[in-house]
Each structure stands twice: as structure tokens, then as C-alpha cells.
Image (cartoon, rainbow, N blue to C red; front, side, top):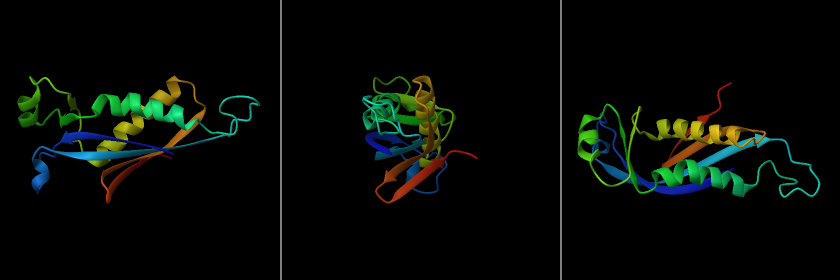
Length: 143
């Protein structure tokens, strides 16, 4: 498992409470992978499933560096799209409402694709997204 943290704003447009307002979180993302121990003698990652640094690099490149200090909105959230489209800051329109549950699936897909593209022979098991210190959504590998 490896954890990263980043700050991002969002809104849940249909939510019954103040979460429908633009606001931000200090997100914690934890990715857990499983696989065989590397037994290649003398290899830098001997005795590891994956070097924590390699997993961190993937998570930083695919999540942190893209979304940190940005704002995410659903493509059907016309208010947010209209409000932020012509701004100069880090704004992302996505095809889903940016709830913790949807972010967990989105980040799972991003990390999994990067692991495959880089040839790591392991399986991404789950990605957990902490929206607050006590609120977490986890996406698990299906099957």
C-alpha cells in the first residue's frame, strides 16, 4: 500500500446539504496492490512486490500532479462548468459527480492503467479515498 495526499475543490450539485456548494478537501488516497515477491537476486526491488517509490511515482503523476490545488466538476453541472471554464486555474470537467466513491473508482482506473503500461506484474486490489479524516470510500477490484 502507498498513500498520497492532495488538496482539491469540488461540489456535489444534487446534494441535500451544503456539499452542493463549492468547497475543498485534503484528500488522502491509498492504493493497495498484490503480487509475487521479486526474487531476482541483486535487483533493486528484490524481496518486494513493488518498490514503494515506483507506486508513489505513479500516484503522484496520475493523481497528485494533475488534481492538486484544482477544482473538479461533473460535465452536467452547468453552474460549475459555466463558473470555472474560463478561469486560469486547474479546472477539470469529468463525466461523473465528483463524490469520494466516484473518485475512488476514477483513481483506481488511472493507477491500474499506469501499472499495466509500465509493465509491473501485479494486481491493483483497491483504492481508498479519504475525503475527511473519518470519511472514506473504497473501490475494490471486481471479481
